[in-house]
Length: 495
Image (cartoon, rainbow, N blue to C red; front, side, top):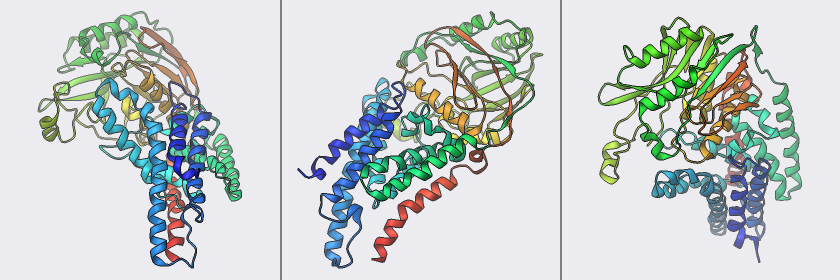
């Protein structure tokens, strides 16, 4: 039986394998295996069609036959992409079912469409890495600011290829893995992709990673604990605050430089003059440490702000950062007027105000980069903070509304990628987990237990100087991906 008849099904299996590379499973080799299966399927559907591989047409073909072949080639490649995307996102986005079943179906089909388009563009084996990079870059931008969750690269945060993130970010990591997977096509020339991929990974291990400043500092990351799941968001805000305050009261002030509370740990109409502000000021004075806490407060027009507020050791509020990249359908509803006619939005009665700026705050331990929760999935947010002078990355987050470990695990994977990209330590605090300590080489040194009340007390380095990725961003990798995808089409048009 020709491969083209069951290639979409085989590609579905490849997508499922790639999905198992993601947290909470985290079997990173399966990400390489899954992409190798997809590359093999792309090669096979063209070979078994009795035509040159991946759409390279013979000069003697007439225009009509060439057009028919090209349309058929598009369909075959798109079906392989459809199979891979469904295999990847049906389990990868399963967490969405906790909120809305129809939303899960729509979102799965939407994210799968990026792979359909990417695979359809692959007219040569060496376009495969470029097409995947472009698909992931697009997923991180559209729609509504992008959705990098459940992306292929998150499954490589614990793999050996992650070092390339220091050179060209998470997109380059994906490109390296995809390049290695092209060997499965059986093309003798595809083996040539191995050498540059290995060189890039090796370069990542020796590339500039910043340098540590003076002594190590000591931090306490507070996790108040409590219920998990969608209905956990209905927990009284006072209870959440009291849990974190209770855990913090056990902190020994000896040698402590920084205390980090999670996102949404404080929920008030107005922070200034509130009882909660007084309690936090007293905590900062008692510990003699800088305190950074996630605060939700009312804003003008029945809206709210998601803020990271900084208290100095003497109890004064000295800086604040308002979350820039909001969660669509989580912190705001795009086109609210339209969706109100279609679905019940009572669980999202108001929208968050979007902040501005580079994502930094000035504190007694130095200027820090802050990525609030969802922002840690977007490399540009932490890159902006480090370019703005951040010596450590703080991630106050709140994943309490997720009943399983799927999204909290992916968030830790994203934080590991940000550490590699920036050469900075990442300190993450969540009300029910995961709270984590990640060094500048992406190693998880400590991680909390989901739901438990606990404190992670750790030392961390303040680091300066910039990695290549922080200097140059995603543009070089995206440009190279565009060239790889475009060249086969240019050759086809010339013929």
